[in-house]
Length: 452
Image 1 (cartoon, one colour):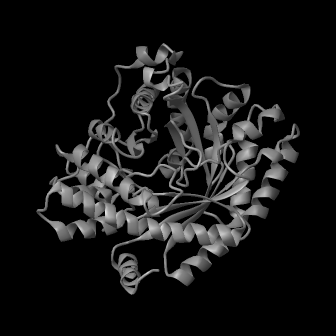
Image 2 (cartoon, helix red, strand yellow):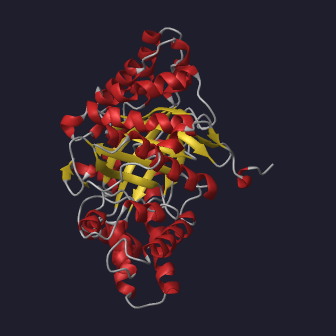
């Protein structure tokens, strides 16, 4: 039974500490939409999505109103389009992206994810067509999000695709240059991508997922920071225990919302993602938690240790609150979307190199990082390779969402607005890795990936 104290505590978290459910994401399988006729396939995609998700936004709003829990986004993820469009014979998959965009607009969701491919060991003809289509697809749609999985612990890293993605990201930025390369904010390059991630831009509905499932992502950086303010000067044992207990309470809110949404929508209960997802709002920052733990400015020495403990404690507390924890479940460090991270970059304390070190111990990688538009494609590819290597060796999900802002130089700020926040252009270097990227081939599966 829920006590009145727990109810009051939850109300306090919502009203004063920025607690919210960041997203309800409906995963929809599109396997039965496959057709050799591209128009038929697109029509079936739109019909299925609009049928399954017709009540998603309304139900989300009803639950938010009835339970007093803010639900920020309602989203959809679908089966990777490289699988669904394979039999069409098309070389340009932009029409499939437009079909997804139209379906998303019809249902009223914020974003739809799944325009992507799993190419960690090699590429099919369909994968090649999809990757080639990414710049045009992301520049011609508003709500479509894309992903490419280039590596994993059991597969190694597909360096041929890594090399391509540097050029794809540059082309996407140039096609959306009037909006600061915003197309790149909707494209994630993964290693060890998970099938039930509810967070954009990398969400997709994996082949092992149900016909239709509800996955919920919770968020509570402000709640964690507020709890830590009550234990100033205490040992790390006390700090970790405080985070665990707070994460438990936050996750229970997500569990309640996921259960209600799945029942009302007639969908399977998928997972609750424990990730601490920040926003540009003051009081909703992962960086500020790390500073509360003890580093003067996020990025100073000690930041990685503090982040490792935070990430671990969040998982330990969250798994006790829900039987179906999944997705990414950690602490996100998206630079432009976190008020504290933005301040740390401005202060000169946070660099790409430090962010890479931090990504070794949290979710999910170099996220919403802006670099000069002049950054060579080979450098972007090398950054992707480094993050993929961290994921491959450590058996964890890593990703890169990087924006080469056209015409921008180091130190400039581009305002994307909303949850995307303010991107401060960071120094990515300009060379030194062309020969590495030009090698191509595949970095072999590491020893820890050979388990059977």
